[in-house]
Image 1: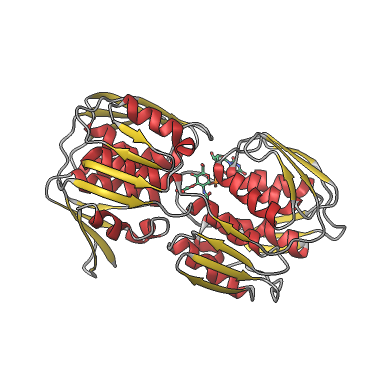
Image 2: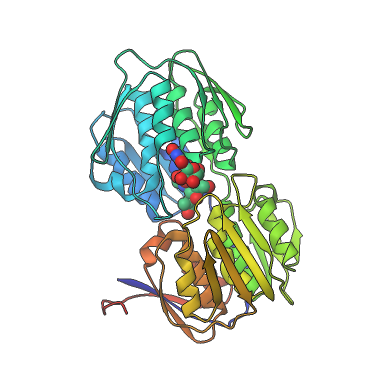
Length: 423
Ligand code: EPU
């Protein structure tokens, strides 16, 4: 078992460069199978979710080559085979193979996705969208079987909730549906714009990405292309938070301010000082931090994925702070762990209430999901003494070279293999 050992209290200085966005990459890789020639993705992060997707591609007989953050995907010999179990269940984003195999073959059998436990994560809107396009959907025993014997036909689809995944899956399928599809109440995340940019380069005809109405004119063929993935706004927010907590001047490169505006607004309200460059953000040493109230919302609101990484900073801040996660109210598994480190945080219904400033001390804690893991790494950087983090595989799913990046900034952090039982 891997463990992270963090000896806290070390000042962070220097520069760090953000990777291509995980949540873009995990949609772009399934999208690439729809081409009839090679797709080259650049800026692909070196994370476990990418390796899992590559294994799934290879099971579909798609050829891949991944080196130096460049992933070449050659889907020319891809075959339509059922994927009810196995690797497909190891990550949430594998559900994008539903939309992508529908577009490619007019069918698909996909086991329901795994991924982080954040409370209930239904896929009713994905299935509703497929049905609207004329797909026959059977959802039984954790396996979704999709067929479209009469072909897919464009439709007007209103999403009952704003969903990144359902918007993406609907776009993927509708690209090859006959005629026009209009998605109303679509999600507006930058990752959706990135996906649409790739698909349009492949020959799709999609308008409106980044607004809540997306219009798709179905096409018969999609071809290969080259595409560079947008920077990871969640990774950027994570390192900016670490820098705000422990930094003596840290420059975060390859970040687009516009993608994290609501996050930046909140940490500035807390007293964090920043200089925003064209594609970088310099985080100045923090003085006294003040607690604030945060509510997560669909983009461009405050991202739910940054709620957990930001919690240790809020615990350090003076006064009472609140976090209301309207997307995933049960995304709170980091709270008991932070409290064991000395934080004073209460879960009050759907509201997380922090009381600071807290003094954190290193203990053994468990990263139960990806962003809880990022939260505990930041808490470990702050804490006095040694923090031992288990559940590291959750962190490696989405943060590439987190140990190397933090060590470059001066953190005392290492990853070890340890088979002694968890406490
Ligand atoms: N929802 C439904 N029905 C659906 C789909 C979603 O009720 O059919 C609800 C969800 O339960 C949730 C809300 O709609 O309350 C939004 O969920 P969404 O579908 O947008 O989430 P997702 O597509 O499953 C992606 C990211 C998550 C991120 C959320 C919200 C990927 C692979 N995952 O998930 O990222 O938290 O959007 O922004 O893109 C992470 O990176 O740590 C992560 C969990």
